[in-house]
Image (cartoon, rainbow, N blue to C red; front, top):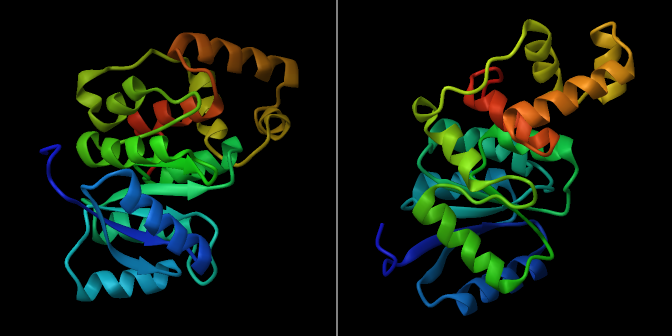
Length: 217
């Protein structure tokens, strides 16, 4: 995609004042950005999509009434798989990030994002198909999008079982109970997989699982 193309953007957030401010900021950070659609929740956004041309990507709030970001993402991936989804959230805990990844978001940003990162994130989703921060690396995300280029690591049955459970919303203590193992043993599995898969967080484990079809989008 040409870097000179106009990028058509939708903004979905239930707080009107924040949404209007975000639209203004998007227009300010890059002359090629054009907000073509606004909505207060996922249900309203889906109705607009059915009656209007598809934008290139949507900046989508995670916490909304009626239809939140997680539900909206699942619906979008089903009906509009080519639409880029940049999730905007105040949640940065691992369980929330895993839920977003499993739903199929192309990237996420914290709501206190700096203008420069907002610009970079929009361009990254538009041009590369992904944008992730924190401990998520572009290399790992790329491997998920193109799994045939990376065969992944060989894991034992117990490691595979731990990996599946790590992609759930269970705590590590609950995972230990499920596997009938001690918390210390579970800590050992986690450390071993972090090293083996070259990841640094539970989210990284989830991304490996997505890539290898251990969890479904």
